[in-house]
Length: 201
Image 1: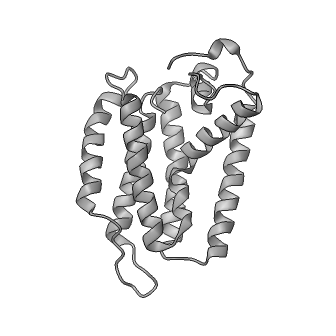
Image 2 (image 1 turned 30 degrees about the vertical axis):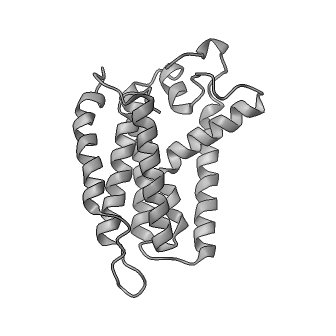
């Protein structure tokens, strides 16, 4: 997800900021605080990300995270989300990185249906098509993804601060997934496939 300026950095800042807020403020149904990790640990990720963002969130990026940085962010995010869900029993927190998740998962399914090798570098991710075929600027794509994910996170954190019933969680997850799939299919269908899009970025 590191091939578009600001994409991964903005997303990571949004997710970790949300996790920091939850760690500081979330309570159970009895009003007891639920801290799922050390807030300083999350801050130790947010601060370097913000500094890195100065070099990455710009029209001509000076630095990128690369594969190592992207994978590191992924593993930390999975660990924190897993710990949060384990502590709260609220599976709706999976929606906190659902925009990226939908793009990645659906693109993989899309390529598998076409019988293509998913490990070969490509530009079939929707956010890359918006840049290379839709001719959107890198920052426009990055901030669009950021804005959509911010709305979802605000709903999840603001409207469901405590542990709802499992049926409610499943319903919200199902509706959220359907909406994201619909958006993905609609936008993806607007761009033709081109074999020449294969690239190393």
